[in-house]
Amino acid sequence: MSPRNKNVEEKVLHPKSGMGMLFLLILALVGSVALMILSGAVLSEVSGTLTGIGITAAILIFCAACVGFAGLKVINPNEALVLALFGKYYGTLNRNGFYWVNPFVTGINPTVRAVGSASSTVLKGMGIEAEQKNTEAKANKKVSLKTMTLDNKKQKVNDELGNPIEIGTVVIWKVENATKAVFNVENYKDYLSIQCDAITRNAARRYPYDTSEGGDERSLRGSSQEVASIMQEELQQKVVDAGIEILEMRITHLAYAPEIASAMLQRQQAAAIIDARQKIVEGAVSMVEMALQKLNDKDIVDLDEERKAAMVSNLLVVLCGNKDAQPIVNSGSLY
Image (cartoon, rainbow, N blue to C red):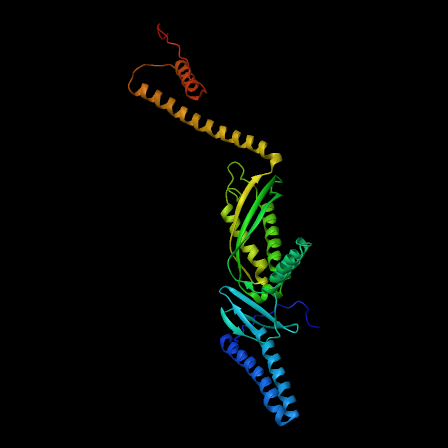
């Protein structure tokens, strides 16, 4: 038994020129009208049988020419038209120009059907206007090959540490193979959106929002570009069967969820204060060491260990304090 789900390989059509066929079809219409007039005016005097044959031939030519007009297709730049003939894949037009194909083929684009059905539901009760919009949407079966943007709105997920966060991504993509996009998935736009949503959630669960103190592992905030590149590769693997190429993927929104945002802000503020204090202490110690070294080198004053300890204590208080120190001047002797 052959498998039911088989990927359809693209078959590029090389159709006839549309301008040449348009000229022939117009010529056929004019010829059929002329033949009908000739049959009614001239052949009727010769034989009634010839008249019937001539009129029948004129009607058949006229009908065939009218049907032939349905085969004229215009393909704009960065567009493709996937065609099917009586339920079977016929071919794909992906070169811009004016062509003529089998008039009985039909264009296939599942995303257009979705737009048509949605518009008919939303615009229900608006009468002719809704019907016209629905008809216009269904009439255009071309698949756009232009570069498009998918804005995956922010969603709430838990990071690797279990913290609730909000993350949003944007995907730059285009249809690389129109045949695969039409036949291999139900609706390639919805398929891409769902896969992007799943990839974003999985990536958020694999990495913490921020690295721990002194850590060098990947994080969503510190390694956003690297994480986005990994997400892009994973998304490309998921949508390759849909004929979609992922050009770029970026993280556009990243924040803690509102319920823990204030607590995390206090944590970040505390970490910043600690870092600042460490820098202040390191600087103060180096300054005290330099002061003692200068006093000793220049032999300005000879301090015992107790006086050195007092001097170090006073200097550290002055240098590390939050407010300006109020010194007390000793006007007496040092000892």
